[in-house]
Length: 274
Image 1 (cartoon, rainbow, N blue to C red):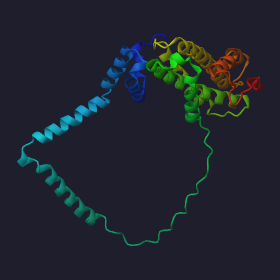
Image 2: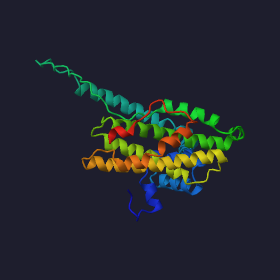
Image 3: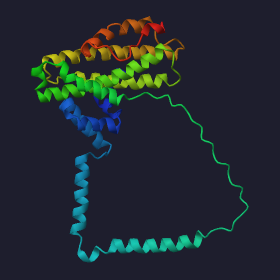
Image 4: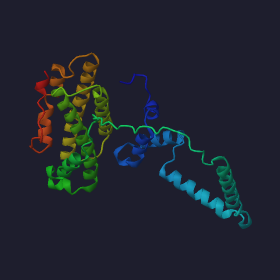
């Protein structure tokens, strides 16, 4: 949790280059001030955006093209000379050594290690997003710009939700290890980034906005439950407790509605972890 003294500028200094570039690549999802602040932070770090790279490349080309013709041979000639000298020195100081009685090393035995990683659910998320337009009224499906924004938000929601369901499933069947806090943090960050986007007005159509509001409610409940589970684990307690179950109680019905009245392919019985 960040302290109350954190300023808006601090939020951008704590972002990675990839996260800042994401703001620039998706300006429609963010307020113009957010995009400008991200670009300013990238400039401060001297991280070139696509436009800066293009300008730099053009500048380098112009400099060479404006160079006097009689001087253009200089750099290639110097490079060729240095290469020749390097070859001579290498041949002098890297002659094969006489064979010594070196005992060959025994080949290293590769051991298989089970990687307990958090799936990304890219395929499942794409399949879920593909069904989203069919769950909207016909007149909203034809409004391309709001629909495009809505599908981006829905994609981020379903990716975080499927990871949250997977993690809750592992907790329910007691299949967690020391990687649990890290996984919980990753999923929490997915939800946090989504909620930061949802606070803006995306000018969605009524049914789109109603569904996004429901997604926002689920995101807040998931974040709260992840914080509780992570704290319980750090204290040596079972991650799932009555407080988590109470927080997540309405989520199943909301997901049922968001899926168009369809049950998920794998039902997670959270009561097993009581």
